[in-house]
Amino acid sequence: STNASWGGRFSEPTDAFVARYTASVDFDQRMYRQDIQGSIAHARMLAKVGVLTAQERDDIIRGLEEVRIEIERGEFQWSVALEDVHMNIESALTRKIGITGKKLHTGRSRNDQVATDIRLYLRDECDVIAAELTRLQQGLVELAEKEADTIMPGFTHLQTAQPVTFGHHLLAWNAMLERDYSRLVDCRKRINQLPLGAAALAGTTYPIDRFYTAELLGFDAPTENSLDSVSDRDFAIEFTSVASLIMMHLSRFSEELVLWASAQFRFVDLPDRFCTGSSIMPQKKNPDVPELVRGKTGRVYGHLMALLTLMKSQPLAYNKDNQEDKEPLFDTVDTIRDSLRAFADMVPHLMARKADMREAAKRGFSTATDLADYLVRKGIAFRDAHEIVGKSVAYGVQTSKDLSEMTLAELQQFSDQIENDVFEVLTLEGSVAARNHIGGTAPDQVRAAAGRARAALEAR
Ligand code: ARG
Image 1 (cartoon, rainbow, N blue to C red):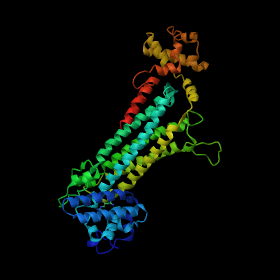
Image 2: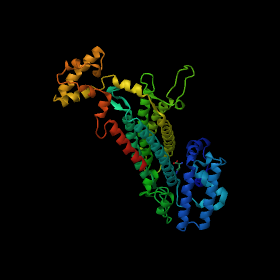
Image 3: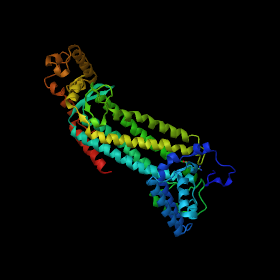
Image 4: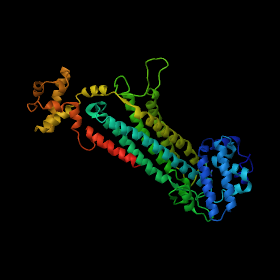
């Protein structure tokens, strides 16, 4: 049958396949709460400016609330013929309260309605995601405090570079997430603007009060330009780009956890409940959660590209293309929320294998830079010191000895400036403790940094 909401000018019903092809109700019904919330605010505003009577407003609000309860109980009959969440709810309202229901759409279009719904939805989800991000960061900071003295190798090119502390490494992850949080908060500001009142594209002839509607819905302000209001999806792209960065960080984190949980590294144990086994190999304990997070990163990047491409050629103002914003956006929200949740649950239970970390830090001449710095303190130019240590390392490779395992005489073959005090410089503890400035890996610095990070989290 012809859609009752706009069938007036049509002489034949919509093709059944076209109705299904153009419908969005299967996925946009997830915004039912925001749609009802927006409609209630719109009705209140219309009554305030005298377009609806108080009685009409109250009937509309009561009817919409009944609709919400029906949806929440799973009793609502969604209809594809009614296209989307907006028309499904409006038509249910009219079935309930009669002709007054038909007045709700006064001074409004689905174009400003859908833009409002998405913003309300995304604003709420930003808050959920921010809370999960905070929970994950709290776990990282707490673990960093516990592991401030735990020594592990630091890498560049995945080759042993210099010793660091595990606490320092954990705080590197936290630093990434701290930036993500600030991007999320910033993006939320641009989400939290009210497009309602733009109507189809040009505004409306009714004496609407957009500031009042904005206030009722908790928006910071009404949007500035009606044409832009109904066609802008920057906020969805920005959100997905923030989400892409978060996933990129979680994916790097995941990659390290996967490596570290392997028999070759043995740096961490993941709790059994975050892992799965193999149906054939009885010994296996697979790091499925980090692997899946790493894998899901790709779909979020894909959604970002989909949204950018969706918008790139659209003329002003609203086009039906925009209906395609929802599935990528919703899947981005689901993916980022669930991935953060899994990590927030898992991180506090990461178990550091301190002895293995320490053993690994001893391999690979990780204190070679410390020896060079020692020679500089004895008056040798850094480039010459580099050369001297390079030769000592070559000797160590030949003789299978770490620098700290060589005798003083052996070391003195390469420089007569080397004295007995060299051995404390060549210890792992000496190496990390010496990097004692803001941002450095010295345990005292790590504790101070964790304290600052904790205070920042508490101030949120
Ligand atoms: N379902 C539509 C969307 O998601 C709602 C707006 C439709 N407006 C229109 N004039 N067809 O964008």
